[in-house]
Structure formats: structure tokens, C-alpha cells
Amino acid sequence: MKTALITGATSGIGKFTAIELAKHNINLILCGRRQERLDELQNELGKIVNVHTLCFDVRDKDKVFDAIESLTDTFAQIDILINNAGNAHGLDPIQTGDLEDWDAMMDINVKGLLYVSKAILPKMIAQQSGHIINIGSIAGKEVYPNGNIYCASKHAVDAINKGMRIDLNPHGIRVGAIHPGLVETEFSKVRFKNDDKRADNVYKGYDPLMPEDIADIIAFVVTRPYHVNIADLIVLPTAQASATVLNKKS
Ligand code: NDP
Ligand code: 8X3
Image (tube, rainbow, N blue to C red; front, side, top):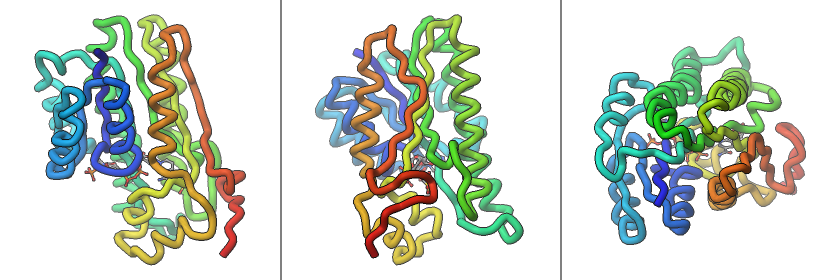
């Protein structure tokens, strides 16, 4: 049985990926900052597969390395890494953007992804196998008004994904990214700092992607035969044609 480590498993895409991978008999290491949510998921999915939880903030370098080093026995080997933890913080023009929002996006979406990957890579290199899926965004392929730093962070993920694939090529490690468009999760609630009305409005007037849609695609990607690596995938709701073109009815 394979083991997958999923960052950002407490909500949205990460949570539904955990549920989907359990259905495929993949053991799980679930990560996030909200321990009670990790516990709930462990109770539910632990009936199907082995589940271990790690509670840490991806921004905290020491905690990241301690958490990965603490893995023993059945959880010592990590076959699949889903680098999913991340969020947008704010949606402001660059001239009025909040420095704390900028720090959060660069520290979580870029540096956090790097710390987790750096901690896990020695295991995959020793195994001479592994599969890394980096969750980017349409914001990593295009830039939209007021998206500035979030888009920069996701463009960085796009570049890191490509760089990882090149550098890890001699070690037999598969690397690929999935770049979703609009997915209805807690994403907009975080971006708009718990302004629920503004957040809900993002997903009104069309059918957005649901986290289950991305989870389903991740399960497809990780269950391909070893010689198949899905390297780069953009997934949009049908109503969305690009980062800025959305067929919204209201
Ligand atoms: P959610 O807000 O629902 O989930 C975000 C997850 O990231 C949570 O589990 C959260 O866990 C975790 N997370 C956030 N900050 C940290 C941190 N500092 N340390 C550890 N974990 C953290 O959003 P989504 O599911 O939508 O987002 C998942 C990924 O998908 C992100 O990388 C996002 O950029 C990307 N994405 C989302 C899209 C969308 O429209 N929703 C579209 C394209 C990409 P906790 O708070 O418990 O730590
Ligand atoms: C999330 C999608 O369009 O809000 O990455 O940037 S978007």
C-alpha cells in the first residue's frame, strides 16, 4: 500500500483529496494547523486506511522538519506528496496591498511548499521513487487585476514545479502540477478575511468547480502507471474561460 502526505488537509481541496485517496486504498498523513479537523478526518478515514496526523504551520521551518522526522514505522515511507496548503490573503491593488498579506502568501504558498518538499525529498531520493503534486492555480499561469502577489506566489509554484521535475528526473521521482480555476472552498473566506457575503458572491451565478472535482483528478493522476507523469494540468469550471473571463449570470 502506498502512503500520501497531504498538506492543507483540513479543508477544501486537501480534505476531499484525503477522502478520495482513502477510497483508492492509499494510507494518509494529513497535515494542517487545525488539529480538531485533522482528528475528525482521521476518525472517519481511519476506518478505511491507516491515517496519521501532523499539526504544524508550513511557515515554521523547524516544525516542518521535526514533523517529518517524527514519522516512523508504516508512515516513514512517503510515496506521494500533495503540496496543497496555501491561500490568497486580500485582493488589493499593489499600491495599497497589506505587507502582512504579502508575507503570508509568499511564506505559505512558496516557502512553506519548499520546506515541506525539502524535508521529504531525502526519503524519496533514498527510495529512488516518489510522486509530487504541486497545487498551483490559473493565477500561476495568468495575472488578473489585484491578484498581484497571490499570482506571483502561484507563478513561483509553476516555476518550482518545473525545476523540481528537471532536478529529480535522475531519481525516478514524478513531479506534476494541477492548476485549478475557481473552486468553491474556504479559499475566498480566507482571502476576504471572513467577509462571508463577499466570499459567497465569488461562487454565485455559475457552477464553480467543487473540491471533489480536483480530488478526483488528483486520484486519477496518482493512479497512472509509473511510466506516465501528468506534468501540468489546468482545470477550469466550464463557465470560466481564463483568469478574467467568467460567464456569470447574475
Ligand atoms: P481552503 O482555504 O479551503 O484550504 C486551505 C488549506 O491550506 C487548509 O487546509 C489550511 O489548513 C491550509 N493552510 C493554510 N495556511 C497554512 C499554513 N500556514 N500552514 C499549514 N497549512 C495551511 O482553500 P483551497 O482548498 O481552495 O486551497 C488549497 C490550495 O488550492 C491552495 O494552494 C490554493 O491556492 C489552491 N487553489 C485554490 C483555488 C480555489 O479557487 N479555491 C483555485 C486554484 C488553486 P489550516 O488552516 O488548518 O492550517
Ligand atoms: C484561486 C483561483 O482565480 O481566485 O487560485 O486566483 S483565483
